[in-house]
Amino acid sequence: MIREMTRLADEHDAINLAQGFPDFPAPAAVKEAAARAIAEDHNQYSITWGVPEFRRAIAATYARDYDMTLDPDTEICITCGSTEAMMATFLGVLDPDDEVVVFEPFYENYGPDSILAGASLRYVPLRPPEWTFDPDELHAAVGPRTRAIVLNSPHNPTGKVFSREELAEIVALCVERDLLVFTDEIYEHLTYDGHEHLPIASMPGMRDRTVTISALSKSYSVTGWRVGWAIASPALIGGIRAVHDFLTVAAPTPLQVAGVAALGLGLDERVRAVAEYRERRALMMEILRAARLDAVQPQGAYYVMADISGLGLGDDIATADRLVREAGVATVPGSSFVSRAEDGRHLVRFAFCKRLETLELAGQRLSAFLA
Image 1 (cartoon, rainbow, N blue to C red):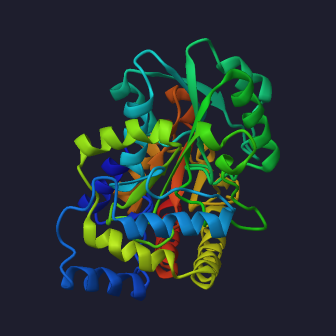
Image 2 (image 1 turned 30 degrees about the vertical axis):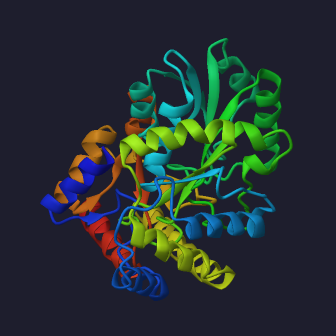
């Protein structure tokens, strides 16, 4: 549905607040590194699981940021984005008929991932306004065939950042029931208002039972590069690497080389990026208030879930359709992110990873349409 809304946005010349990609430039140093890598002829296959220098840069980054010690030769697999990393993890780690617990709303790819792996999903609701979960419901979702929990923090689509206390609840359950965690951390550097991302793999008892997934895409505004990674113990990474080999062989070599430069930009670049996203978030919330849409300010990532009940435009699909066709603003229907469509009928998702002038124009279009 996310990609379908992008297609409709293009068809109707709408502002795309549906799919999570920026409309502003990637950092100049990162682009220059990519061009230089191509010019220097880093244009052939890399080792299947990634350019060694890039894997070493990832290991150094996790040591610096999270005090995690990684072996770049035996614990990292470079993939074609975090999307492939999660798919390779499902296929390489799970057996048919395994169960996987997900918190809902959830990123829509997790459903197809489970189908292709022959696994099934069990759901634990996140409830607004804080998008918290009930520990008893989490425990109840784990059955005899449950193999793993998917954790996405900062969270798409709600912008929730799981707290240390919530992570501790998940850790205790995983240790008690011998579960794995597949953790999607692609928005790891986009947090606000004192909320901090904590990789669950860095917590006691979780080092060998976690597959940590991330990518260059969101932190460095290069969603089209498709360069991501999976980090896991040697016992888990072997299956992931094997599946990755048959899915895509290797991620783009020159962009992996450029990834070394991206990871080397350091804290100043991240602080600048977060400050700019905080400004975009403030404008997005102002636009939603002016449009009479009830929304919870996100703690991280760059999405807002908005309640459309008061607009009188129909359910989420009808509202999203009218907004893209008549208002010229594309959103994503909330039912895309839940297991039962009725639970998302009152919601749509807005992405604010756009230039301020883009968001301002979207606000003007919404205001004119609703008037």
